[in-house]
Amino acid sequence: MSGVILSDYEKELLISLVEKGVERLEPRITPEGIKYNNLGESDHWRETINLLKSLEEREFLTGEDFDRAIICPSCDSPHVYSRYACPTERSIFIKKIILLRHEPDGYSGELETFVKNGRLVCPKCGKDLGSAQDKETWDPSLKEIGYSFQCDHNGHRFERPLVVHYCPVCGSTFDYRTARYIPLKAYTLSQKTYDVVKNTADTEKLIKPIVDFLKQNGLQIQYGYEIKGVSGSTHQFDLAATVGSSLLVIDYSFGDSQELVALLGKKLDIPSAEVSLIDFSDNEELLNLGKVYNIPIIDTGKKNWVTTLQKVVEKMKQVPVEKKETPRRRLWERRR
Ligand SMILES: [Zn+2]
Ligand SMILES: [Zn+2]
Ligand SMILES: [Zn+2]
Image (tube, rainbow, N blue to C red; front, top):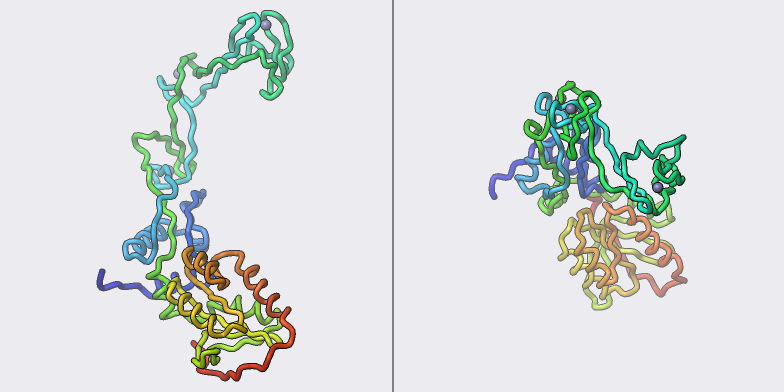
């Protein structure tokens, strides 16, 4: 694909999603239209759907079949109720009739013929068989043997009613023949989106919740950090946090697993430091690799990132006075 163009609005949208830690958008049908979680309230849901579709075509989002919606053919609303109707005259004033049999004496008939003062009583033998309202209380000898529907006005009997839809927005009634039945997709942010955000976003803003959390726990923060490893090589990190003599070094990832592999190499050379990776994407592979490498992955899109980081901080605070601190210095200016 070439000539990838993102409008400023689209770019801002994608950045704001990453900033909020949103990795997935799911649709739901509401009286106001089809809404996506995490997208804020908008009256222009059709435009939103077209925007998401278009972002999917350009591979900034990955679409996945999620739901279906019945759309009113008159006014395009997805807020539709269903009713059952008589197949003969399409009246919705029909009722469901349940057929029962009392096994011991073989009496069978409509449920109504059993009802007496809120109880079910066999019309043939007179035995009380439970509450008319609560099926759970039915005597085991009472069996439901079938059902049918009956039209209130004209008494038509039928086994299967028509399903008709009613749109409260414009008041029209329609059925499957004229309804629009549309697929609704859920979307996840693609690697391409994370790459774009990585190049344009304000990384400090993205990690703000994490930095705030570390500060609240009494850690000192430094952006851009350099430290000499056991091997004598110097390693660079995006972020460092210290408490007492404990050091936590952190790199950022936008879903690229190479970032984690590189971090593993650095970790092995700095055995005294805690190491974590902040991942802004939704990369399950990274989470699994992190377990293998014993590197906590702080996935800002997952609610449990606080717990993960909390464990790291607790471990750091448990460390008594360490050996001599490795000399460190600020490497580069704060990123913007
Ligand atoms: Zn009976
Ligand atoms: Zn009828
Ligand atoms: Zn309508």
